[in-house]
Image (cartoon, rainbow, N blue to C red):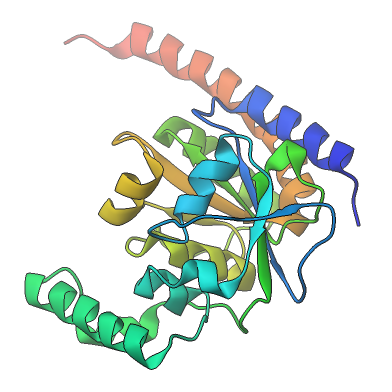
Length: 239
């Protein structure tokens, strides 16, 4: 397993190239509870709420029972619900359908994890004592542009269009296909405090080194292209 120092270096390399409003979040889907990291105690309204805690510097792991307050998040993380919770799910989905927020046929199109994790570990990227399956970057569009261009250069982009609701499906989508842009959803923005001007870029942990390498080239290229565009604007703009 890569050391925490490895993830710290990668976080520093990426955050020096891209202005990020908060720290990147490392997430790992595990077959057993990890050692050396605390088990989450308490309650949160959704699985994405744990991203907020990790971005603020907490390192911890959850178990499936911690994810039952959000039927949609439980679905994307393939966490089975009790019969009582399944009724809540049906009620939640009916509300979404009735509001026109979601169509019934869209459910089958939502990516899910391949299997139920026994535990899910969370940490700020540089503090991670585990190898993340995915890393989430909350960023402004200009930062997402650079990360997306770097992913394309590194050959780790999924090629998928930016995803919408639910935000949590971006994690299994990235695990399956590569880097993902997510526009977020209203629930996630409430639960995490994601700004109106921010969105997510999600990348597989194993691809993070390639992303950082490509980002160095992309940021230099963008600086040069900015100068080129500014010169052309000065030369040709008449309005």
